[in-house]
Amino acid sequence: MGGSKKTEDALGATSDHEDINSLSKALVGGLGALGDYYFPPDLVGGCCPRVAGEEQDIVWNAAAEAADTERIHIVWQAKGDKIWYLAIQSADQSSHPDTWCPFASLLPSMKDAALPPIVYTYFSEETATMMTLLSDGLQIHRGTASVVRAKAERIARELDEAPIIDLVPDRIAKLTPFPWYSLSLFEERARRVLATVVVFSSIIFACFAILIWLGAAMSTVTANADLEEIRVRSERKSLELLRSVQLQRASPMRKKLAAFSDLNDGLLTLNGYLEIYTIIDGKAVWRAVIPKNITANRIKEIGGQMLETDDRGVIIGNSRESLTIEKSKSRRRRR
Image (tube, rainbow, N blue to C red; front, top):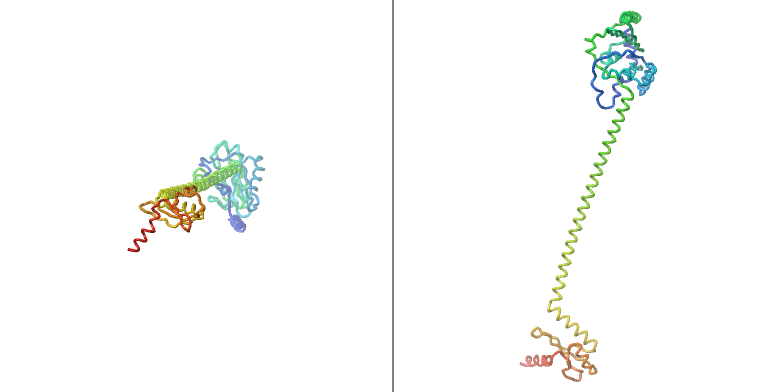
């Protein structure tokens, strides 16, 4: 009991670091369903000083040296300033996949573990295995049942009567299975996670690109629709304007105004002036005065004829009726 008290005080004094283990290094996804327990014949273990943040590298180097190979599966538990670990060769694990070692569930500070120093033993029909846990160490011994039993009793006496716990099937069934893992396994899992992130990022980027393309397409369609509507309105207005122009051209009043303008321009070229221009029964009747030196041909060019001559010059008009217009007006005024 004195040794247990000392160990508890030592662990309490070094508990500044957070407890972590190999299971906490799992990235994503399940580790697979664990099957039966198995005590590997080439199991190795030990205890290393802890450097926060570098636990995995420290354990890996120590376990690879102890197992004499870099292809290993490990389980480790860090508490305070120490790391306890168990390791086996990956070839042994590949021969017994989905198995777990009960010793891995009993490393210090795990759920089912007791305070060190403590001795765990397992006896099978062919061989026996023993794990000795100290506050600063871990030892694995194998041998025949009698040899391991004698060694366990001797070590317990040396550790101030440390408890010896025999791992029988009923006790093992109550333990929480703790899986093995290899660094290469988690590197592969990290690659899968990275690949998954890349794929999802690509999908998200593609979705954004599609949304942007759809927005641009909708904007283009809307703009084209607006342009089409503007074009239709412009064509409609142009047609209406053309119809209006055609109506204006076909208007009798426009023809009369055009005839008046042509007559007036012709008289200006002859240095004459318009004296009377009126509409009688829808027909234009006019009379003008021009110089006496104007020839008959030029008078005909403006659609007129010579009517008489007076001191003002030559009186011309488009009909002789134009001579009587003023006279008729004068008679109406006298009446």
